[in-house]
Amino acid sequence: MRKRLKPHEAEYLGFTPKPKEGVRNPRYSISKDQWDKVQIFRNNISKTEIEEIESETQNPFTLSAWSSDGKLLDIDEYCEKYNLPIENVRSYKLVSHTGIPFYNIQFKEESINTVDWNVIRNLIEDDLKSIKLKPIKGDGERIGVATIADLHFGAYVDGLIRTKEFSIDILCNKLYKAAQKINRYGFKEVHINFLGDLIESFTGLNHRNSWKSLDKKMIGAEAVKLATKCMHEYLLKHIKNLKSITIVAGNHDRTTSDKDEDVDGGAANLIAWGLELIGYNVEFNPLVISREIDGINYISLHGDKGISKKDTTTIIWNYGKQGMYNFVLEGHLHTWIEKLTKKYQTIKDDSIDHRRMHCPSFFTGNAFSENLGYVSNSGFLISYNDGEGVPEVDYKTV
Image (cartoon, rainbow, N blue to C red; front, top):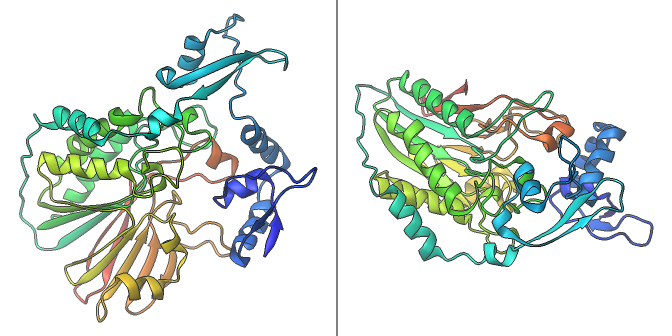
């Protein structure tokens, strides 16, 4: 079906907003499920929230150039105030006729999108080569799997009403807590599944307002290096009997501002490579990883790509193992509730031989999600074979 959508509704469904058709909103080709999501969205968002979102969508760089003491900021001060990468500014113009002065900034997207992988890899290798892995061993009986989604390393959130603060320091503290909670189970083997969105942004431009919620300078190689080191220093090196790690890529892990230019999640791939340099057993795939652990087949997805739109039976037929319990795990939604449906539920699909779940997120959200009315606590999942070939699943907060 073809329906007219407002800009914020189009972005909500993952489309790039089209220009208006005269005075009317443009039409989009959408499915019935997508139209149902729009209806639910419209019924659960206030007029004020819509106006705020549309204002940001139509003019995302309208940020006041006045300082707190009433002086006009120069471009360096402006970028520092709003965490903009000054080194990536191609050109700028002060706009002052609108009542509130602001800088109209053009960024060097071309220079960011053209990634020299050899240079990036050399930078990462130089930074990580001094780190030596010292595995921690312990006694145990069961085999455990920890599933961790949406770290959004480099995100910075502060000053919101309902959404909790988030920063690199806060994330590192959560990672360390997760390691301690995993160790309390006393597993003889631990396997970690990362479900993507390891970083907030490689370019600072992968979403329209990504730069607004970034820690300063947490883009490019710096974001990848620090994410890799912190995952090692605060989480992985503390886990007893850590056997393997898998990583799938998320939409925030691309190395370009255009989602069609990097479909392989280059930043997540670099982090996987960096962890291998340190000495970890890592498997990476941009789309999906299917592997058997202790009699249960785990299928890891991020949740944003076309495969997640398929029904569970199709996913298991294509990627699962027949005659075995298949456990499909997805992130992306920043909660273990499956949002945007008429039934708010934890489990997306459940049967005698399979289960499909959305995992909780380490990232607690930002201004965009709070505007939509969605907030959550940080968490992850621990699962293990219950002795009958079915996963026992525990939800852990951090």
